[in-house]
Structures are given as C-alpha cells and as structure tokens.
Image (cartoon, rainbow, N blue to C red; front, side):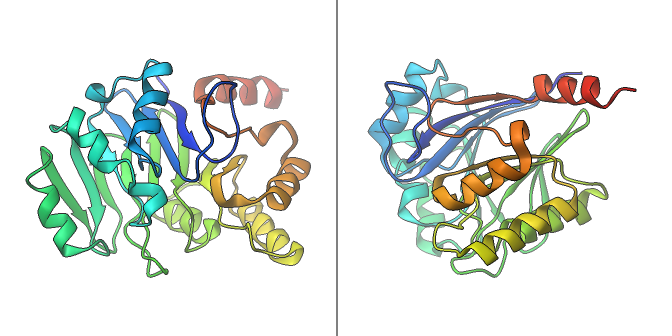
Length: 251
C-alpha cells in the first residue's frame, strides 16, 4: 500500500511554530502518480517561503489545482508559475475566460473542468464545478483504499462535496479536509453540517481555513482523535491513520 501524504503550506490557522498565518489556504498533496499543489493562498512570497522551509520544491509539482477564483486561493498563482512554468493548471469554467486565456501562455497546460467529475491523474479527480457563489470545485482522492474530499472553502457546502464524491466513487468518502465555510454559521447550522457528514460516512475531518473556531471545536468534540489539526506546516500521513484504524477496528 502506497498512500499519499498532504502538507498544509498556507493557512490562516496556526500550525507548526515559525510559519506565518495569512488569510488563505494551500496544500501540497503527494501521491504515487502526481504531486499536486491545491490552491496557492493569498501571498506568493509566503507560499514559496513555506514550501522551501517544508522541503517541498515548487518545481516538483505536476498539477496546480485551483478550487475557485477568490483572492485568498489564487493570490500566489503568479509567483508559483514563475518558478514552475511547466505545471498543468486545473481550473473550472467558472473562472474568468481572460484568466484562462492568459494562463495558457504561462504554464505547461490548462485543463478546464465543467460540471461533471473528471479524472486528472491516477486516483485524482475533480468533483466538477458546483453552481455555488462563487463556483467551486473540490479534489477527490481514491488511492489504495484511501478516499478523501479536499475543499478550498466549500462554498457549496462540505456535505454536497462529499455526497458528489461518494456518488462518483460508488463508496464512502472517509476524509473531509480543508475549509468548511462555517465561520459565520450558527450552532444549529454547524450541527446539521456535521450530522450530514457523519451520515455520509466521513470518518476523519481536518477542518481549517474558513471553518471557524466554533465549528472546529464542535468537530473536535464529535470526532475526537479523528479530528486532526490543520494549520500551516501540518502534515497528514494518511497511511498512519489507515493503519491505526485497522488496528482499532480489529476484533
């Protein structure tokens, strides 16, 4: 079993000491087939500095996946492409047509995703773009028994993202990761979102970025040790948790 790992390289939530916390989100996902940069945060200098400190060279990234066109998720785009102009950039058709056209001259390839789920590489998929405001896509992983949905802000709702991923894969999605966009939600809305994810079969959560302190604490109470800390610098070794689950569930 060769499971991927994920490192949060940009976040407004604190993680490891010594990393700046600026508003936004980005993560590097290392899989057997590809290395993916998911979003770019709001500041390119901070993004590249964090990647260097975490020994994650930008030149090694194959796919740059952009969830939606808000400034706190594409602010580091130019800085990244200056040091890695060969990467494939994955956007969706809710992005500006002018931006998409400009990107074609700045990177190796541009892939534009429509409303249907789309394979990007072995075990890596886009959910397809949701009709949210703004339009947003999320990333699906299905690798060696690992299933995960990774969001930038989850403007459509994390439960909608997980539900689409589950329907597409034909099996439960065990991990829900990223911004859950519950920072302005009241306690009832947070409880509904959490109950929906539990009903869908989500076993592990990594709520960060725009999730909000109240929602993050509610997930921590509900999921216990299966609610993992986010924050810039944090690394998730999926294999460690899959093995832990197997040991815990064994008779």
